[in-house]
Image (cartoon, rainbow, N blue to C red; front, top):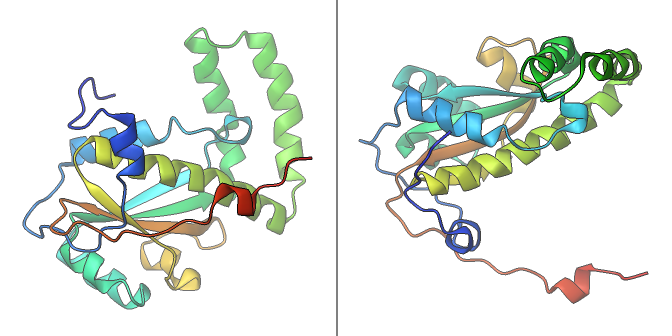
Length: 212
């Protein structure tokens, strides 16, 4: 985890965030820093800590050319960003359940008997989900990690743009993933901004909130 951020002001990181579509195409984020940002993003919560998010970082010209026809109206981000981060949800994420809970025990964060009880309940429960139910779970959880990555990137001095317009049925296979197992959730462009980004408006809280 980063001990120091370029920006460490909560208000600036959160409320200063904008969707940036133009980046310094000469700037590349190192693999070390990219992995650091992903690690920090995955402190996001997930249902029973199954961590269904999976990341593919598209950074080379060759791989960006492969991505270009799949992202519809977002080619400017693809052309100029340091990388396009493809976020998938793993429909078989529970296969990592034992590894995750074993790690919690090894780090003293969970007693062995709690691990055993939890896994005995969770794994069969996840296996009982319909495809639609599992799809919902992994997309919700992975979206939390995506939002966290956007804020983490700002702390590191970068900007992002979340992209939902892409060819969902083609994305996984294009990058060597099993499309039945890995469902596309979102694409994030990330890099050094060369534009200020777009300001936008939000509906007032009173209009979208009911108190009962």
